[in-house]
Image 1 (cartoon, protein in one colour):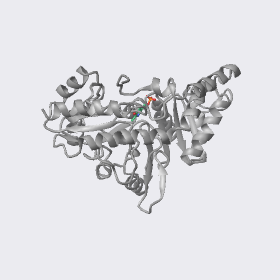
Image 2 (cartoon, helix red, strand yellow):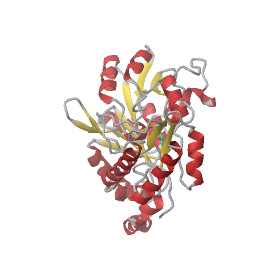
Image 3 (tube, helix red, strand yellow):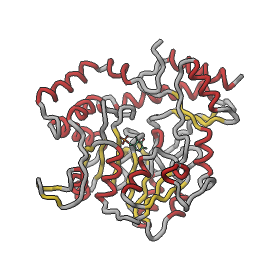
Image 4 (cartoon, helix red, strand yellow):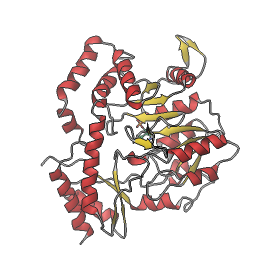
Length: 376
Ligand SMILES: *Cc1c(COP(=O)(O)O)cnc(C)c1O
C-alpha cells in the first residue's frame, strides 16, 4: 500500500507525467516565462470551463482577494463582512488594506457563512461581503446575492477551496462557484483542488470595466506601459505554472469525482456512528471535497489524531482557532463566545486524508483506524 498522505501530489503527477513534463519543457524552450502564450491559453480554457467572460491570473489566492478589494475602490474604514471560520487570508487582506473586517458566524451543518447573520451585521459603512466556499461546497449564494442587492454591496467570492463546484439556484439553473458575485477569487496552491507546482491564483468577473481595472491593479497600476494611474501591485501567474494548470484543468471534473468517491467511502463507513458527524451535503451545491471534515462528538479529538498518527495516518484540524481569537486579530469589538458555532467547530472538527489518488485499500485502512478508536 502507498504511504497515506493528506494530499498525494506525487502519485497524481506520475499519472500524467509526460503531459506535464512536455508542457513545462515547451515553456522552457520558448523562454516566455512571464506573460507567455501559456498564460493566455490557460486563461482562455478557464474562462470557458467556468462560463465567465474574464479570468485575470495572478500570483496566489491571497493576492486575488487583495486585488479585488483594491479594484473595487474600497477605502480605509469601509466594512467588509466575512466568516469567522476560514483560513486567515480572507481577513488578512481586509486588515492590510485598512478596511474593517466584520465577522459573522457560520451554519453548523455546512460550516459556511450564515446569511441571517450577514444581514444583522450590515451598517451604513458596509461595502462588501466575502463569502468563503469552505471545504468544497458553496455558501448560500442566492440568499447572499439578495442581501447584497438590497443593500447595494459588492460580493467577492473566496473560491479558493471550491473550484469546479456548481451552485444550484432555486429555478434549477447552475453556475460555477466563483462566478456568482461581482468577483470570484481562487488559489492554485499545490494542495488545492486545481493546484500548480508553486504559487498561483486567479480572479474571475463578468464585468468588462471591472476586468480592466483588475488587470491594471495586478500590473503595477498601469494600463499603458510606464504610465501608472493607480497604486497597484505586482501579481503574476508565471508561464510554467499556467502550462501545468492547463493540463490539470482538463482533469478537474475527474478529480472532483475521485474526491467524491473517497468521501462516499468515508460516509458509508461512518454512517450512523453517534460520535462522528460526517460532512453535511448542502442541497444547493455539489461538493468537491477540498477537505473531508468531520465533527467529533463526545470524543477526545487530540487522542484520536494521535491514534491515527501512530498508525502512519495523517489528520489535520482546519481551523483550530477562529479568526476573532487569533492573536494578530484581537479586537475590542469581539470576545470569546461571540461566535459560538465557529468556536464549537474549532474545538471539534478534524479532516481526514482527501485527494485524487486515494485507493480503497488506503480508505479501508483509514476508516478502520478511526473506528477502532471511536468504538473502543
Ligand atoms: C488557500 C486559501 C487562500 C489563499 O490562497 P494562497 O494561494 O495560499 O494565497 C485564501 N482563502 C482560502 C479560503 C484558502 O483556502
